[in-house]
Image 1 (tube, rainbow, N blue to C red):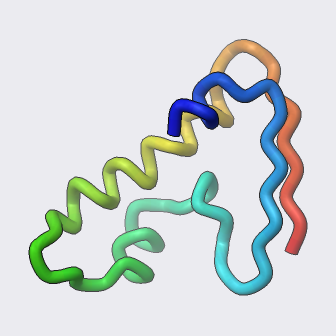
Image 2 (image 1 turned 90 degrees about the vertical axis):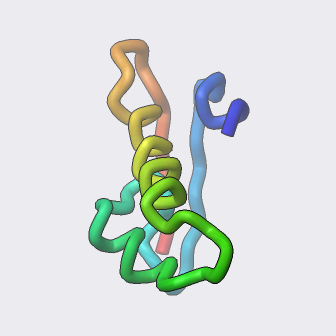
Image 3 (image 1 turned 30 degrees about the vertical axis):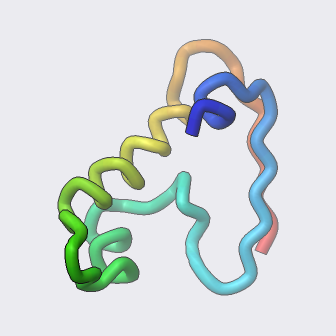
Length: 66
């Protein structure tokens, strides 16, 4: 995740699901399902927190292909 925080350009190619940087909490929760021994809400918070890189004040060049 450090690479995402410091990147000046993000390119994402996905073929079957919504890109991780665009997940809502509900979508992340639905696709993660129940994983024994893991805190689902902590995983969802981490996943959704990744999208913050898209909304920082400094510019970001992002592209996504499906």
